[in-house]
Amino acid sequence: MLAAALGVSGAVFAQHRQPILQPDGEPPVTAFAAQRGGVSLGQATAMARGRYPGRVVRAEQVMIGDRVVYEIRILGDDGRVRTVRVDAQTGSFM
Image (cartoon, rainbow, N blue to C red; front, top):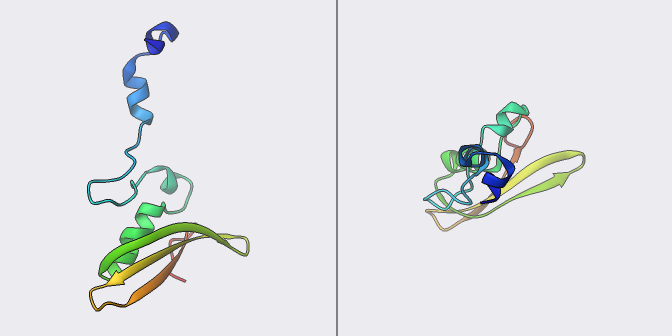
């Protein structure tokens, strides 16, 4: 109803909606990070899982100095917990 009152179609709203989580429980991967020249938390998580197979138990954005870094904790198939850091701007492992 609000969209009709504003004269905006529902299709416009649908373009900006992002899922909260993907079906596998991971954060959504968006194109916006690539447009900014970096990687999203979802992309960094996928990269970390590619390097260290296992289950992601925590993924968060932190500041280290003046850099935005994603810290991803993975419970490996061997039972070890690994903390993987990915630079949000460059996508490189730290």
